[in-house]
Image (cartoon, rainbow, N blue to C red; front, side, top):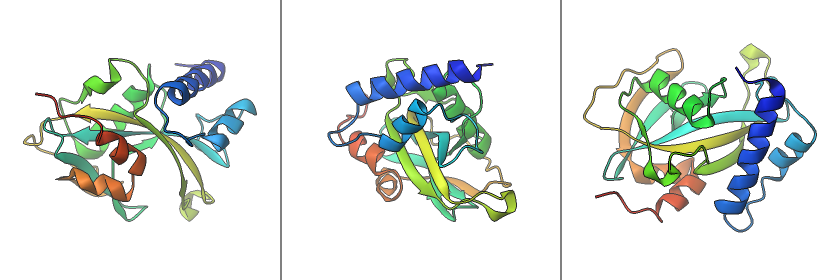
Length: 191
């Protein structure tokens, strides 16, 4: 289990590497960087104005489909993911969320990652909060990772959090993960 200091150090290094190697021009992650500099506990969902989440952009091997969830709280189709839970690497947290929410098996980290924990995209976005948890509207600093899975395998949605899990056309990512969708256009499908 990571200590708060280890988490903060790993997150700061990951964000710095992302900004130098992956980020598009004009992508500064100002709020996330400010919260890191201020020493906010970004591993806790009770930290405001924002905290870290991880999510999985799951592609079919031909990159034509993506595995999505119909999220109960948000009320729309999204990539699987959730609040960061302690893991050896950020992509392990994303993978665990995807497996829990969809029942997907056989996930593999996309070759783009070169077996590193560098996010494919970091998207800081507003979320509505949840009155039943006394959560105000806030920011999710979402570390997004690419995975590949077989779309013919059965899925089992985690019905406490999602209405359904389903493979959809990859173009749907434009609606809620525009950075990842834009970056995907630069990747050729393997094979």
